[in-house]
Amino acid sequence: EDLTGCRLLDAGCGTGALAVEAARRGADVVAIDLSPTLVGLAESRAAETPVRGSLTFKVGDMLDPSMGRFDFVVAMDSLIHYRAPDMVEMVSRLAASADQKVLFTFAPRTPLLTLMHLVGRLLPHRDRAPMLEPVSLGGLRRRITAAQTLSGWAPEASQRVQSGFYISQALEVVRR
Image 1: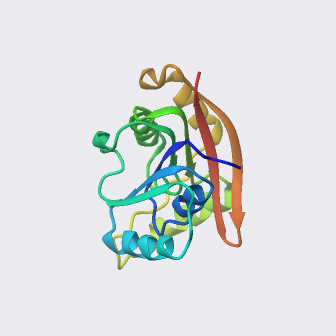
Image 2: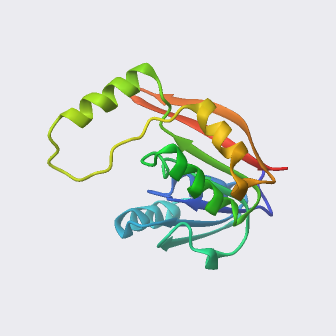
């Protein structure tokens, strides 16, 4: 798909795969992540790929309003550690910078993922990495629809993303 003329925020860009692909398709992309290491990897990846749009990487807070306005805000795996009420608040804050759509992924509440989550909570942890928070798609849709901070926005398309053991759910929230 041609993204020429679109301004896109890759919120929590990680190693930059989505940002580079969007810029290759013509988008003007701002990609931000808290991790300087990941942003460095993203910049290296971008240097090897010709792009038609523009691509700016930043280390910082994906909610920073000084980055300006975007047609689309994408947060792939950036919200998977939040409980549903906090996730809706984050989507609301991301939507404040979006003119058309916010697309994000979350950990879906499936029987297997819920069981793995419960077992994981029982086991001792050596690291302090945040745990995934499985969230119900229906419940999340209802919360977004009811959120006063998201009036004028509606949850629309959703799709399961799965590869091997990786499972997430993508949800698109669109300005009405």
